[in-house]
Image (cartoon, rainbow, N blue to C red; front, top):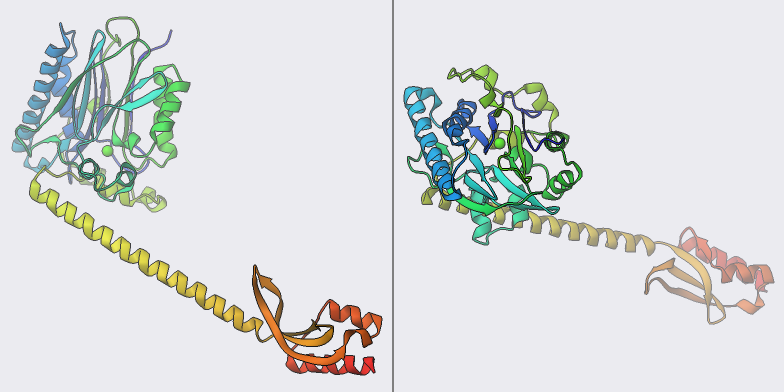
Length: 411
Ligand code: CA
């Protein structure tokens, strides 16, 4: 017996509270990643999941499920706005939401934000949702590559979420085929932002049991430092009609009773952890989301351009400095070699050379300084051998006195 669905949510290693929520029911599966300045992220994701949980039922067709799920997301958006109206201290709260309903051999998906849904099929992992982020916009318009997006300082800026900002946010929906053996992975960016797709695919391929696979995925994120909350919902498809969890599983903030109290102390970041963690800077930026507006987009693009120019300048200054240092070192090195002398042979006569015997590739680092009239053949055999092997001198004076001694020996 293998269980086919699993849901796990972990607070991570840095954050003080879990603002993610996850849901795994009989037909519906959801991940929501809440956010909001001083408060509200956990409220937002939990509220949103509660608001759409009624779509966890059998639908007659995928189209019907698609309509219901899309409408439920808009209802959730309205409910978030109403909650903010009643609790103004929650202003600015919002949540991503990626939901999936299985209808026979189809899955229906509704999505907003940067949580992700992947399909794993025959060992291949494919991201089926598109991130509603600023960097994804830059990738789409060809300004940066996907690799650059993954490390971009603004990678967590969201362009669309459910919240109190837009009364009619644009929600992506799609209907996709599924077949026995497929696994659908829903996750927050606490997983996808820190664990590569290759590693995710490898873990899914190696662990058939859903609970163990979900645990391994979360553990992998923890191994990478898990600066953010991590939520994983895994759905395995087999021949049966529903994915039949006994009772719906709620994880993360959706698993706790909802409270609207703003506890700033609890929502702070645990200091000792942040002091120990090198990725601390990525904690604050995850809190951020912005409504989609052309003005804001233009501002971000301008900022991105400035950043690229700064980086280019930094690079060229750096490279110039390195070249200057290398040239400087070469000049100093050459000068040093030219302060050295040795005694050797030229055309059968003893000679004083300036420089060192060694060369760099084809470059010789020595030249004849003085050719004497002392013939090599006139030297005793031992002296001849040492001259042929060259004799190092401390300086020019030393070299000349070596020549003097050799001259006496040849007489
Ligand atoms: Ca997150």
